Image 1: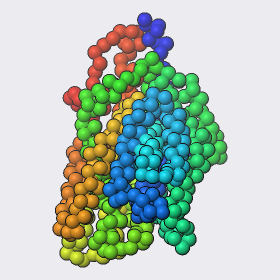
Image 2 (image 1 turned 45 degrees about the vertical axis):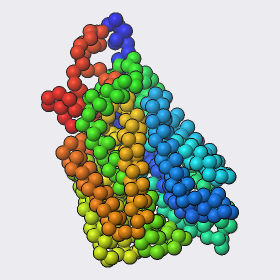
Image 3 (image 1 turned 180 degrees about the vertical axis):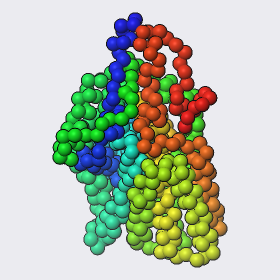
Image 4 (image 1 turned 60 degrees about the vertical axis):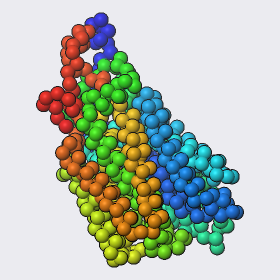
Length: 508
């Protein structure tokens, strides 16, 4: 038994070697290849909102207003299903396999969406497209965290997550051209919009093939030799791109991993609810509150402008562009502070500030002091901060749980947040806007602001100080060897992990 135990345990410095790498063209390739997910999601959501009026025409699909709402819900439901299904497979089968499969899945069903012929076909293809995007979330965020150096993990994650708004800007610009009947016939413009998103995704599949499997995942799945070869190849890429033969010395202690360890679904439940209950509560709170606010405001932005400010449907894209720009620039400008000042202060600060600014926006709106342009400016300033916080919610869910459960933890938190906040927000705001009563919409703003402030306070009290720390220090892998006696096959009671929520002296 002793020999068997020793044979399955490897001591490695792979995590510290990845974290010590200087930033290089190789890292930019990772950002480009994996970050496209959020761009595509931004295109999908914005295009559907932009073409909704066109799809109600009898010479297109002839959809009703209620069917438009059902299609939006169908896409969200698909994303939740995809996150859970593909998230589980990402932890089991690997990051690379799944981020190739999910992007290919997305591409196929986006193309098919362009060929929809009625409500049922369009709704079905939207569900299937959403499944691909939801699966991407789990696979992509896992891979990014495990490949990017710890000192830049925060700003990189935030920048990539905020690229959703680059997709929104692209879609808004496309809608101004493709939905102009003088340029493109209405029955064809909306189809071309979906097809172009698929073309972009297909091109990125080629780049993604260059992204390696996560060495951290290989290490914890009995493939230590392959993990070593992958890290050496990454180091060679970095040396060549920097034009140097020397890389910084890896810091930190090696870790010992038992490669015979297997993770089961019960381990995921136990990790989230028993070992890290406070972390789970924080991550879910951040996800629910930001999902409510974002989906409530963004999904109803067009009808808010047309109902209260009488903006023409064809001009809505002009207002989405600056709104999306504010959302995109916020994480880029504030992102470095999440690695320097720290996660807890910056997440709490951006959540609370965005909540307070939304209250100010609501008061100005209620008193008739805003027009279509000034409310768009107010939204842009509010979500300059809100977007940084919302992007950090995804970062939090992906970096504070053990390696073996990371993708599934992201999936569960995203699914719960989307179901609880992402669906209820648009439903509530849609009803408030239908009343044509500014007081009703003001109350909606107050609810959204209060939730964001609550999310910020929860982070301030219970947040995890994960900035610049190796993932293995934030949450020890389930397969990490804890006691030297285990090498001899002697089983001991399992102590609480040093970074768990339970036990006295636990660190967060």
